[in-house]
Length: 367
Image 1 (cartoon, rainbow, N blue to C red):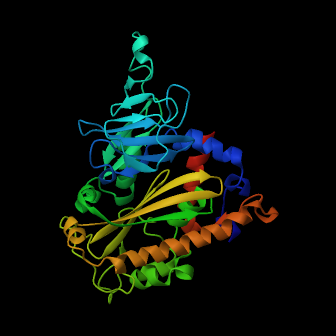
Image 2 (cartoon, one colour; image 1 turned 90 degrees about the vertical axis):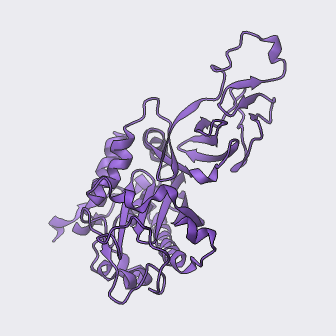
């Protein structure tokens, strides 16, 4: 039996600040990072600031309607430009330290005594830009000088999981509306959260509501175990809700094959996508320290559901409980990562083999 067990990463990988710094530098600052929902910055001047690796990043909408991303740093003396998590710049971004002012396109437009320096390059001394893509209604940011292929890394992760490049398109995620958003501050390493999401070996133990809706999860195989497989609702279950009662309006593009099924996708390094017939749940992780990860979770519904004020509480409650159960488990593991008992790591059973693949991927990124 022991021959079939797979070793995990050693405990220090979840606690060592130097390893976390390497992950910030070589993972979060080089890959496509899902930053904000595009609807959070609906008009010119609206902005949000997010932490990507070691950088504070300013994501905003310019006057031409395009989404832009900049390092949230004044080019003069390095002060943080926008100190709020979100807000609106009426005409420009102004540094609160010496009043250097930048247009919504990032160009330097004004500063005290700037007229006495006519030769200053307004673009060269403008804000440092980052690459952006919009997909599924979210703004994805990459801080790398040369970003990796978005189609391979992000879209490809969905295709690899669902087995069909167009399968996720049926959910029309970009045009859904945020019906609820919950932010969780989890006292655990980001990898523990990824590992938890990737397996269902724990489902029968800690997710009674979820296994009632998705009975096959009691067998310990996650929805991600098989390519293209969606976990089927139980026979008596009407919808993906905390009590199995009816859900909300089904997303029109969802096919008969996708109906009454749950699909889960991991997009490395920090996104989880959950697909059910009437809504989509999307998690974005923001790793802030070796032992702290903020998770922003959106429940997305048809605009008509949100605009008419339909009650989404039963569908929200199901996965909110799942989140709380998962994050409590991760927080229970985090202190043990420093134990002598876990110095060389633990083990994975065969149904968790894809966690082993995740570890191999991460070790290659850090090599």
